[in-house]
Amino acid sequence: MKSVLIHITADPRRSGRAAEGMRVADGLSHGEELAVTVMIDGPAAEAFARPEREWIDESLLLKHLVALHLRHIPAKLVAREGAAPDPHLVLAAVTETEAEALRAKAAAVIEF
Image (cartoon, rainbow, N blue to C red; front, top):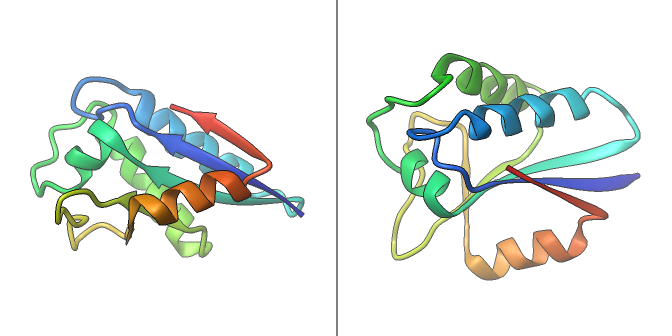
């Protein structure tokens, strides 16, 4: 089984690319030939660590995040400088070292 990493860095407060990344991850995860992991990093991680959500395409993004969670597709947030994901979201915090290991292990990385 090939692994695909969906790497989301786009700030959902300024762009719909984060929601698009979640949608793509959700779609790819329905196939049995791919192991999909979502990694949220950079400006996107900053937005996901805050409880305020005035995001572009917010309902679409959250819909796909929940769908991924219900199918046990891992969604990771790269936590820098003590930041942690909003506890209301279904994200696991990973270190930068763990994030690099996920990238190295993936057969393909799709950037959003």
